[in-house]
Length: 234
Image 1 (cartoon, rainbow, N blue to C red):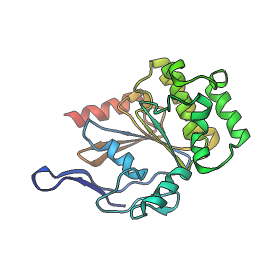
Image 2: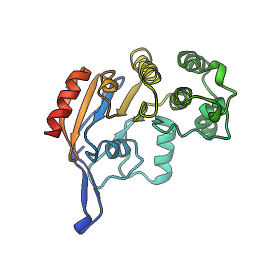
Image 3: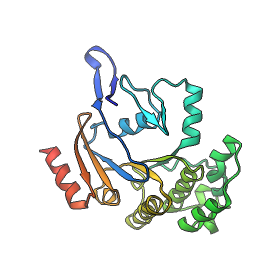
Image 4: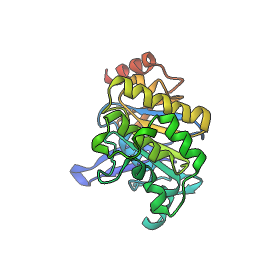
């Protein structure tokens, strides 16, 4: 794929991603890690079609997205990608239920009742559906955001530091549910994180440094990830 992303020109030129070649197997959970400025968030944004690449090719749900017109790219993301952000990004004027259903409403689609029940039950938010975000705890808001990401049956879910604003118990509950979605529902998840414990829930951890993948750890543990991060910082 030789994915390259460059910001700026001349003296301000920064190579955020340097000829990265990586593939993600369907139905797997991948953690992307690295020091601040290593390119991990930029990689996620380029993979998800949120940011245009400088050169190379990106394929999503079997389609090359690198040169798609904006309207087609928006439709592709809407139909094939789910997003979970650290800041939740829930609309404050909508209830939890309305926030979850928003992607389907925008696409003019009806929810799958079986999936709806699985999400609401699995995430434990059935008694919070009529509440607005301001009436929910951080953990509850993030679970609502998770349901919103999953409700469209996306090919892939991108999670950007999804536990960064949560306490340890809420974070563990969310990561456990993401693991369940991979193991039992065949979901594909790509997660940017700085947390070695969070990465241990993944099948694979990619370590980035200066815009390049410098390590690819199968079945990561918190210990193996911490050791890899320590090597990067030496």
